[in-house]
Length: 154
Image (cartoon, rainbow, N blue to C red; front, side, top):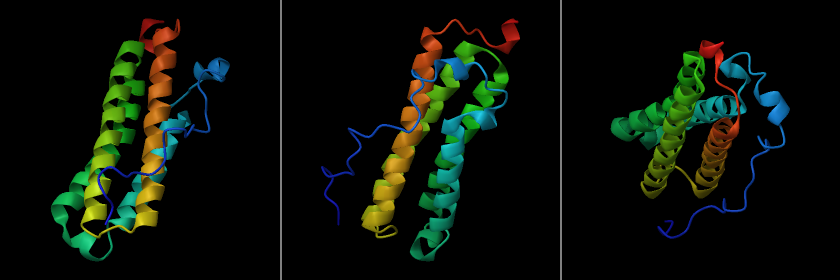
């Protein structure tokens, strides 16, 4: 069993995309599916669905459904914020998405503690959800500093 003060090493982890270096490409999102945080969140969601469909995890309906909903919330909020067309609203929905990534992390600890996930699966998922949260945070920071107003203000 993992002790509460132990967690996968993510402090020095840097996502593959650096939004600061890719500033020129940021304004070219044509649809939410172009956003890397959404793409990585979708991959995470698919993996969570597959793992939570097995054995004891599948029978713990409360945790299984809460974890799935939190994963779906990550991608759904990115999509909804983008589709609203305003930068401030998009930032707000990215913040909600980032919060959902924290919820997923907490629920992964519960799944590990209950024996539903082995340590390797936990570590892999924890790193993935951390990356999604960092990508969302990077996009939020970029948008806060940019001159982009969003499509609804054109």
